[in-house]
Length: 331
Image (cartoon, rainbow, N blue to C red; front, side, top):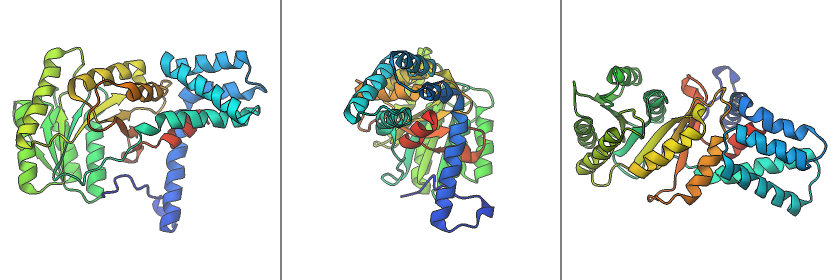
């Protein structure tokens, strides 16, 4: 299997391979904690007192709501925390804080899954998202990680609605030294069909289809996404193998609304959550996790958060790990 996000130590570290991985993991966790500081500071402050009484529970509830965890997820987290406290008999605030980390980690765990690109040749990945979420940039970063992992990638510039979207993707293709399929004033579905056909003919490992950014309320554009999906299936009956949505972590509960709308239209398999650095709304992942457990529209694969982004650099896009996120958010 291609290892997309094997974390490497800085060049000057001079550590053995196992040590290098550990150093890289600590470095990422440290940056993640800094990025989630605005979200987690009010939650962590609840545990500076001596007792988790009714007043402290109310503060914790308010902090979770302010972090955009939403009412259902907040209630779920508090209920699970109370159950763990009763089960363990914990009264020490540091221990209870650890129990909260466990509750959040367990809630997020079903969202953790590696992106597999070994089962199909090529693996066809559709990527959607509203304008401004960082969709095309995320595709560029993902392309680089795939290329560095030894996978051959073909890009499809099917975002023909946004000005300069094709040019932006072509810059990433040139930077990553990968092929790209584009057309002047081309139909998005036609570009997607040509890309999948070319990917099969050229023996590519992955075809990444950059679809048009749109709002879920723009029904005619959502219909265009469905058309792309149908046309891709004509080029390869088993495709698309992954349908990813890129969402801006700063949008909070609106991000959950986007996930619901795009899932209803396409049947999402995974998410890329960007711009978590500096946001005060990182708790939305808890809301997404709770909704994902109960989603009525259930494709073959459960919904995953494949990647999270905490900055502009290439290494700022990494695979999502539930325990890392929970620790960074609470601690």
